[in-house]
Amino acid sequence: MGKIRFGVIGMSEGNGHPYSWSAIFNGFNKEAMANCPFPGIPEYLNKRSFPEDFLTEQGCVTHIYTQDFDLSKEIALASNIAHIVSSPEDMICEVDAILLATDDGENHYKMAKPFIEAGLPIYIDKPFAISIGDALRIYEIEKYPKQIFTCSALRFANELILTSEEREALGSIIHVEASVPKKWDTYAIHVIEPIVSQLPLRGKLLDVKSIKKNGFHHSLIEWENTAAYIKTTGSYKSPISFTYHGKNNTSVNKVFVDSFSCFKNALNLFTTIINRNEDLFIDQSETLEIIEIIDKGRK
Image 1 (cartoon, rainbow, N blue to C red):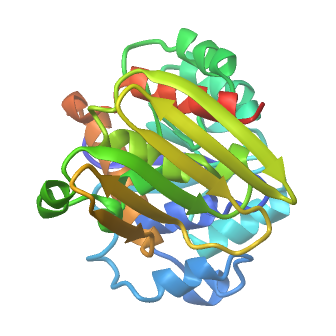
Image 2 (image 1 turned 180 degrees about the vertical axis):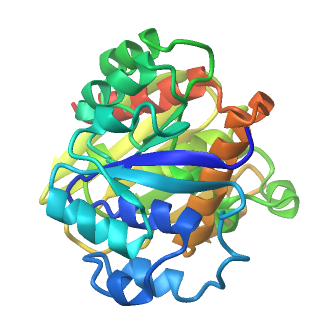
C-alpha cells in the first residue's frame, strides 16, 4: 500500500493519544503543541529530531474526529492534521486505516463498528474491551482475519523487555510484581500485557483475585506455572515498574521511561501489518486472555 493515510478518533478523559500518535506520523507545530493539556507529550516530542525520529515515511494522519470540534481544531493544529470532520463516518472513504485513540473500552464496539464494517484496518487503543463479552462482539464483526489490531504499546517498550542474559540469570520466572498509576480498567493493561507477552510458558490462566481499598486496586493473577501481583495506585503517583522473580533466587527490576519509542514501535508495527506482513500480528487468544484478566480483576 505504501504511505498510509490515517484517520484518528478520540478523545477520552485523561488520554492524550490523539495528540501524540498523530504527531509521531506528522511531526508537530511546536507553538501549538506547547498548549497540549498533557505536558509530558510536548516534553518528549521536543527531545526528538524531525523527520528522522518520526514515522513520516510510513504514514500520515490526514483526518481527525473528536466529540468536541474545538478540541479537534486544537489537536489538528498541534499535530499537523489537514482535515477535521464533524462525524467520524465522514472519513471512511478518505483514509486507508483508523486509529481509535480512546481508552474507554466500554465504548469501543460502538465507535469501531462503522469502520470495521467498511473494511478498514483499525488500531483500537488499550484496553480493547473491559469484558470478554464486549471483546467477542467486536471480533465477531471483523470483515477479514487480522483487520483489528490492539495492544498496550508498553508491550513494545524496549526498556521493559527481559534480555537473554536476564532470563538466564532468573531461570524459570515464578512470580512478578508490578505497579501502575491510575485506574484498573484503563491502566492495569499496561503491566498485564508486558507480563503476558514475555511469559510464554506461564500456562493456563487459573484465577484472578482482587482487593480494592482506599483508591488502590490489588490483584493476584494465577497461571499454572507462575503468578503476578499487580497494584494500580489510583490518584497516587507511581512509576510503571516490574520485578521479576526467578527460580534461581534472583530478581530483575524494570521501569518504564520512554513513551515516544513504545508508541512509535506499536504504530510502526500496525503500518507493517497493513502492508501485509501479518506474521507479526498479536495472537487473538493472547488479547482475549488479557481482557479476561481485566474483566475478572474488576469484580
